[in-house]
Image (cartoon, rainbow, N blue to C red; front, side, top):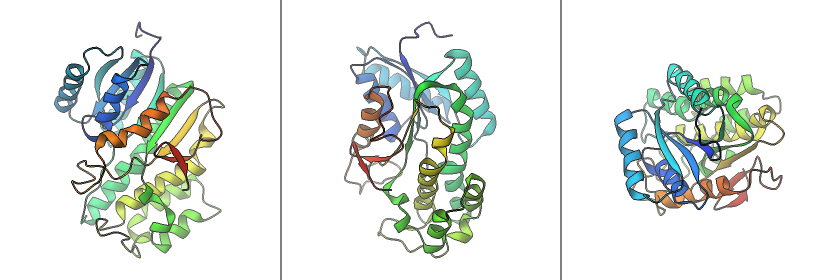
Length: 275
């Protein structure tokens, strides 16, 4: 067990670069000391990110360590959960940040996006949920592109179906290629349905199903970080990755006490907005 049990323990997935990296950096810069676990698929890139953050924040009261995690590998998820249990026992915050978006994607690319941004995220969350502290928080990095009004009519109707349960939601995800054929790109920089659709699936999961699995004092948020200059967002984006990290860190810094005004809601620019 980690001897420094006074620090809140935070896992940030996919955090060797982009918004995830900036979230870790802001946590290290916070006046509240945290124990942060930076994760990445590639150990070399993850270790390099940790070293750069330690150099950048030498006076930090918090701590950062690296642990390998490939969200698309079930063995990696299991090994990571075992490591968390052995090292900390519990975690206080899970930031599901890892995600992909591939422009002009092939059918295989689309399947990979749905798997990474939704199906694997559910598996990871299910695995780590028993290790979340009684007043812990789950933050899902989502997108305003997950709005149902942006999706094609077929997918939108499937996600709005009153009889939808978690099993059916997974079926929708697995049948995504068929259900998204009538997608009409709403913006020039959005070329296909996979990324918006993956976030629509995620938002539906957060809004309708995950809350039922949480304890009475555990918190949950879906967050739109905005369109940021990252590998996913491109150089055309108006915001920086540090801008995108602002709302997640704001929510982490809030008291570990459920607030019904914001709990379970979709948050952007530190404010509740509609799904």
